[in-house]
Length: 83
Image 1 (cartoon, rainbow, N blue to C red):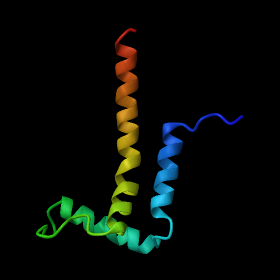
Image 2: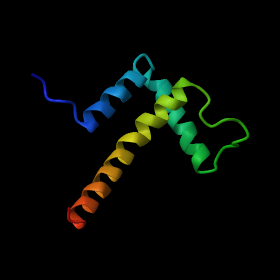
Image 3: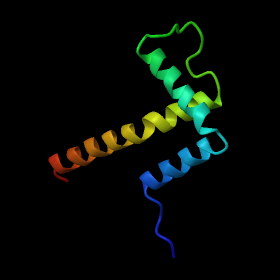
């Protein structure tokens, strides 16, 4: 019997599926453009997440760190609050 997948494993698998078939160069270019938009270096008069490459790049770039930050915060909360 297999143990259920952890939330981190589920996230990794979802990101892998999202990135499947996306050339690394295209993902890297999308990340650079998104960072430029975030920092205000490029105009944002058009949608920021324009296509699948943008969505995948954003998810791959931000989701792991966001997941770990939320996980750490919830663990700290659980330790601080008895019961």
